[in-house]
Length: 356
Image (cartoon, rainbow, N blue to C red; front, side, top):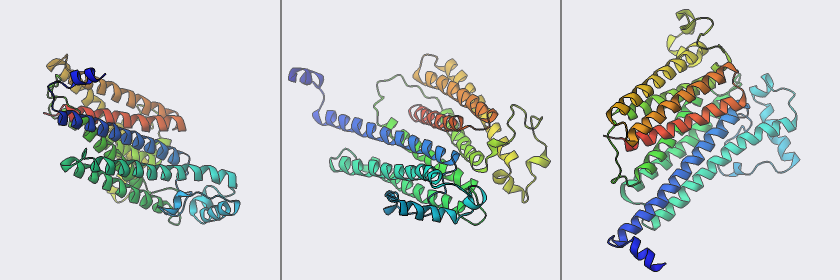
């Protein structure tokens, strides 16, 4: 056994081997965090689709980790929920057991956020103390941690918007912001993790700026998807490729809200139309990128990744169409959101390792 180890490290400085092993552990940890973020986004999507997001009417980052443990505590939480407009306008007459169901989704979403915080900071301290994380990497990870803390605050601001009198759901723009920041956190984690792998001996070729443009388009599409979800635009115009019998809805429908700028957030016609348009542009760009890479370097890893990205974007568009035609059932809405994160993660790796 000792001879095998000696042979495997022969001619390689011990410090370099130790550093390489440490970075491998760090990379695995960061990818684990990325997986938790995807799970968090999935649970957040289920919370939204089940109408559970306003069931907890207070923000208690520490004491809120403990759910109601007695019947009296449950009744007290239920009474708080009965004071908001969502109960009065949508759920009046709900039973305690039905309330416990929606409460469980929102509590699980918040609890998962706390778990991610622990899974981030405890290993970070351990790796830092051992010298595996330092310098620029340490600052980058601390910045991601700060962004995660900001995301928690954004989440509460989003929930608070739905607790306003007359509101039965959160503000679409705030839901879109919450989803977009979560997606950016995922991009940051995958970007850092994929950059820690030594690829000096691989046959990587430059793919130019196209992978980063593709990544930007995917983030834009996710943000628009957040607006669709927040405004429930997917519940209307459930035909494809036409919207109410037209490929392009009339301007009177697209810009019916005054002032005109609010149409981009509050008008379900324009919100859904924009999501469709960017989907077409995204798929077209991914197909073009795959075609150009297969011509430029057909046997390269970059070419294979570009081809995979084209397939993923096509699959995601198809899933989006199915979700729309079925009027957003829970399974389809969740699949569309989670698959978007898979597309985003793959695009991040492609952009990171194909940089010029």
